[in-house]
Image (cartoon, one colour):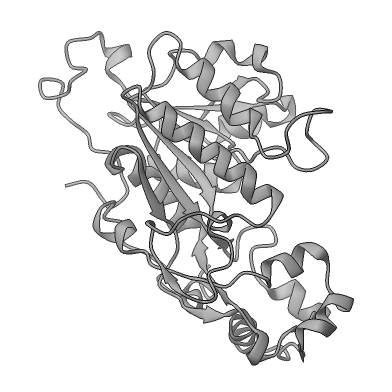
Length: 325
């Protein structure tokens, strides 16, 4: 038996790749968007060990080559914004973990459609060449659901994106689904707020110290979370266990309103609880980005994550995760 979230190791006589030379039998996992979660996924995959996958990572930054090698990854230089630089990705991987975000507001090409994700389009085009991978997992966002007025939702909920960045994620999901029609087992993880004490900006600590207000209970919204380590393990599980064309909510078991989350964190850190303000007052005190998060309320059901991907959450609640080392 393999640990939850770990790829299975098959003897060569049972592996569908068993008749090939050894250098081709070994699984080759390509990580696209190898930031904090990507590096955690690489650690969960355990690349480099006997019988484990060979790990490759796309990077557009020469400054990251040494770091990626230290984590057991073979770096491949290329830029999702320059499709011609991606040719070496054709046929190189048996599985792909795509965590790269669409272009932001200041990153789009002049005159391009703000609702589209050209990065995912460029990646999938090159992956179709010289033999597509067996599976592809795309890390999307829970923002594609839009505002659900606090309802408990599962993956059958229709998307209703309210922000430009969520619109681009919906486009990326559409491209990934279409890619899956060619026989690739494509899966989509819809990811909420990612946190971890060892992640840059990964806890509410700094915000609590600044005294940034939260909404009063009457105006507050439900928020969803996932510990970065659990998300990485979910990504790995989806690479091997994700069903074709399947969407998975990638959240933990916590169901808290945003203000209650910050109150809980303040109590755990021994800091003052944040002040509460009404929504109309918040518009004068908070950034547009923060206000956009406070304009959507939903409680995400993670039954598929646990039953189909068989992910056992190491940090099922934010209380256990915020106290982790």
